[in-house]
Length: 234
Image (cartoon, rainbow, N blue to C red):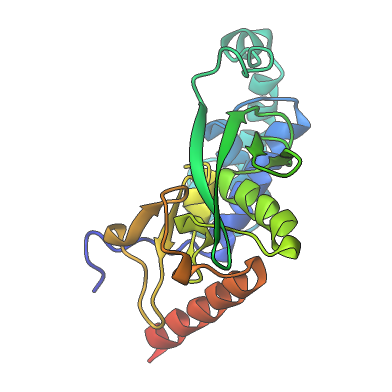
């Protein structure tokens, strides 16, 4: 029996619904994701308990046609305007984070600045890292992804970013990335599902002894996921 603070594990169908909902929003040029897009995502991904329940009371193709009509209406466009221009100067979803870079016994302070952009699937966030080398700039779907892209550029030179999101034993859930911008991660333990008490800030400072390469962290997370599934099946 799951406890109240245990995280819910999204099914593959749930992920497909979210992907289709986002695709529907982007196809129309929308800069937001609403329940109307989620409903289209549910209708687009085939039979499920949700579509079976809906079909008992209404005709599914009729629902889709009505949703298409509403989304194409002037009223909808007026009530859901696009975002303001580049948020670098005005958007509150931005931050400056001091971080520690580690290479063997070497230490140096650096700064990561990031902004929420909201333009396209691979350009939702922009981030810059200022350090002793040439400044790095990346665009990413979430801030964990931005951190990964910084790490991939720094690792060939032997540098590690000493933050919680760079630890071998941390990784974000799909919900943390989709809904929280990848600004938090779970501390993961083999065979144990992650819990809300295991959440840490992605950019909080971490013990350098706990850091890993991007590839090792990814493999560890995959192994952890299989271990949790195996434990649940027993």
